[in-house]
Image 1 (cartoon, rainbow, N blue to C red):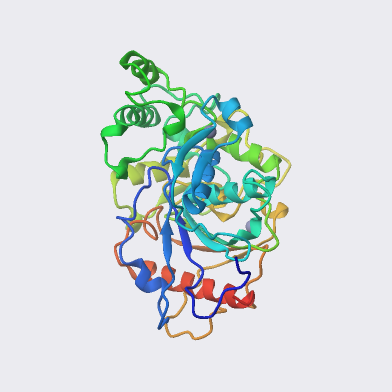
Image 2 (cartoon, rainbow, N blue to C red):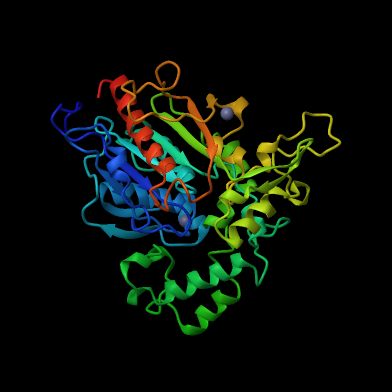
Amino acid sequence: MTNSRPEDVEPIPLVIVQGFLGTGSWLWGNFEQYLNHGRSSSPRRTIFVSVGPVSSLHDRACELYYDLVGGTVDYGEEHSATHNHARYGRTITLGQYPEWSPGLPLHFLGHSIGGPTIIKLQDLIKQGHFGASAHPKMIFSVNAVSAPFRGTQAVYVLGERADSAPAVHPLSFGALVGKGVHILSFISPLLPRALDLHADCRSLTYRDISFSSLLKQLWKSDWAESRDATPFDVTFQAADERESNAEGDVDPETFYQSHAVRMTRPQHLEKVEAHIPSMRHVTSPLMYILSRRLGAFDYSTLQPPPSFFRPHNSEESSMGEEYWANDGVVPLFSQWHPLPCRRTRCRHVGTVVAKSTDKDDRFHEGAPRPGIWYVNQEDATHMSIIPLWTGTSQQQQFWMKLGHWLRAIERDRGF
Ligand SMILES: [Zn+2]
Ligand SMILES: [Zn+2]
């Protein structure tokens, strides 16, 4: 294994980690042409990883690691005992990047919960979950779009109980998704790979359980209504628990950037706690309703209260509009980075558009530095930059700018 990358080999690949229900690359379109813009030879390879589309951050991070290096997915002895599922998952005969090591690191891009999945992966590596040979600097860069690092009120709007998560309101959208997951898991041996739910460690197929057990799960799901599934992991309560364990602290050798987007505007200029969707961004009635509900969310209904919550009459500084501004699924503040600004290193910049003619990759003032979150903000919806490719100039600019950024930080580290 070498510790340096010869000039004539491919650039460091970009691993793409998708969000809730995300699977396959079929929505992503022609993005690679723009990612590799201005590159005459050796295009950057992109690797779509296969992780549980409804699984917890912990389970997804474990699946992500073994999807890259190969081997049998190990969820950890303590974790699997706590959450009552098998310790080992499927065996991946050949990983997508078995050479992954500190000398041969990878870039990561996460959409939605793909973002916190990458943060969880780096945290598990730091804790030694994957053994002594894994090092946090194997993650050269973290790039996130619309990521709910600090949770989202959408999960309560869709059915999670505000006073007793992970319980779910029956007949809510969230409960229906949970039932759908159980039905798909039950018949999964008959389904195409595109519907892979990564439920191997949970014994939920018709080969493992009886029909009456399935009915029991449809009545009350041991998975969807547990602390070991996506819905609970995107509650503010779960995010606060992660942050209290210092999960999300930056690694001094990794580069970080996020794209925080919004599709709303303040309803009244003098009142921050009411945001409404801008009509030019509304593409469906569901998105309109969800964005509006997020924009008017009453944080005082949550039990326990989130760490950032300040009541109206509080003497402490009040909450800013970033708690109500949203992209239709995630509030703006949560998309910035894990941890409050005062507890991490960050630099928030406005809309920065990379010009395609720009020869200088260092479009941020000064060279990008590791160990700092660069937060970019722009107007868009949860799906309109990635993953739903429609070929807009905003999407083209996003990918070109990302390609420039990756090259700039590689040069910075002598890669
Ligand atoms: Zn688990
Ligand atoms: Zn910040």
